[in-house]
Image (cartoon, rainbow, N blue to C red; front, side):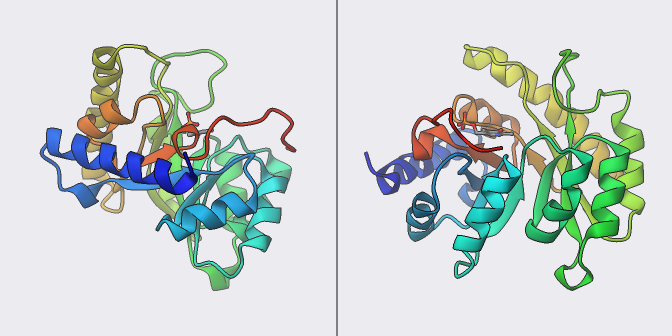
Length: 231
Ligand SMILES: *Cc1c(COP(=O)(O)O)cnc(C)c1O
C-alpha cells in the first residue's frame, strides 16, 4: 500500500471511531509521525492532505524541516529533550508535546525567537506510575502546568500521554478515560488547554472514543521504522 492508501485508511478509521463516540469527525487532528522516514515520504503525506507532522530525533528533524521549507507544515516535536537541544527545538518547531521538566520549558521560552510567536506545548505525563517512562507524575503535573502557564513565549495547550501498552481495547479505553477525566479538570483551570495528545497506531480507536484531540500516527501511515536512524 502507498502512503496515500494508508492515509485514506487511517482517515476512514478515524471517521468511524468518531461516529462510534458520537463526536464530530473533524474534532480529532491527525499528526503523521515521520521520524526515521525521509523527506520524500513527508512530501507524499502532505499531498494526501496531512499538514501536521511529528518528529522525535532532532538532527534528523532539522534536516527534513529544511528540505520541506516550501510546504506549509506544522511541526511537532514529540521526543525526549536534552537541555542542550532546546535552542534548535525552539527555533524550528511549532509545537512540543514532550515537555517534562521545568528547566526545559524555561529554556524553550527564553530561546524562542520572538518573530515566531509563542511555542505551543503539551506537558508529557506519566500517569500510570511506570518507572523509566518519560513524563511527570500525576503529583508533579500541577506544578509544571502552573510554571509553563506563566512563561512569556510559551502557550500551554495540552497534555501528552503514552499509557502502558495494552493488547485489549477495553484496557486501553479504561486507561485513556482516566487520562481524559484528569485532563478535563485541568482544562477548567487553564482556558487555553484544548489539546489532549493521545493515541498511536495501535490504540487510536480507544484514544478517540475516550476523547483525544490529536492522535500521533506513525507506523499505520509510513510502515515500520528502520533502526539505523540518526539521533
Ligand atoms: C513514534 C511515536 C509515535 C508513533 O507511533 P506508532 O506506533 O508508529 O504510530 C507516537 N508518539 C510518540 C511520542 C512517538 O515517539
